[in-house]
Length: 95
Image (cartoon, rainbow, N blue to C red):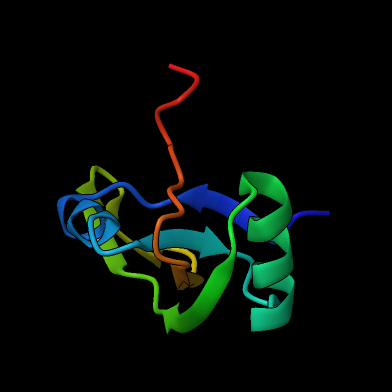
């Protein structure tokens, strides 16, 4: 089972791609060793560094006829992966 959920493609994350850093959403239970192994096998690159961070779900609320409903988005985890100089991960290759 892969620990990677999806790549994060935002303006800020795309700016890091030029420096050889790629951002992924990963499982909350994943550790750096598992993330490195999955990225190296899936994309065929050499990983030199990994930074992980846990994200807290945003509180959301809406008002309906029956009153207000509030809840929270799911918590998550992100990994910023640095690959060896010269290696590239192409997210748009199969489009």
